[in-house]
Image 1 (cartoon, rainbow, N blue to C red):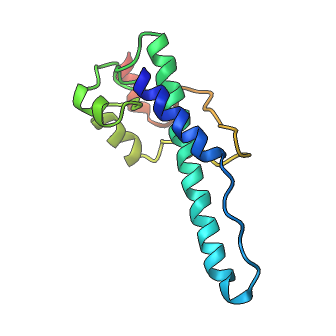
Image 2 (image 1 turned 120 degrees about the vertical axis):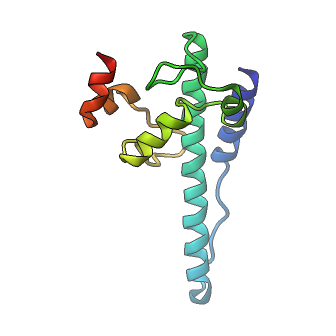
Image 3 (image 1 turned 90 degrees about the horizontal axis):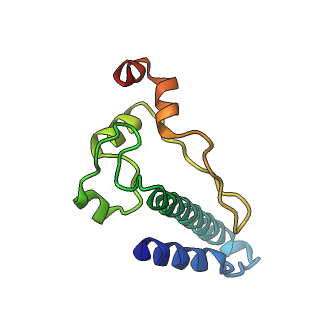
Length: 136
């Protein structure tokens, strides 16, 4: 919990800092645009990680941390050590990626984080008919 909280707070602080100002000289505009786009992609990635950390903290509160949201099986400790906010076992993650079910969150206003309203299991059941039969 402390590791996740510290990571979330560090990323939130980094995300809240203002990006450097960009010059208006025409020769530098291409580089400035690239730098700005790159910084925005980093910010978006940080926002995604903050969201996942906050969700992991909620799972700790609900005593569901470390349980795969798809299979209900325990997530191996080595995976949790590598990615403490992970929601899925490797096999479930691979299946989600294979079918393109994992949702990419978009960057909102600075300081906001978008959240998913449906669980990964619900999305999987809607997309893959065989997932329903596994559950039954």
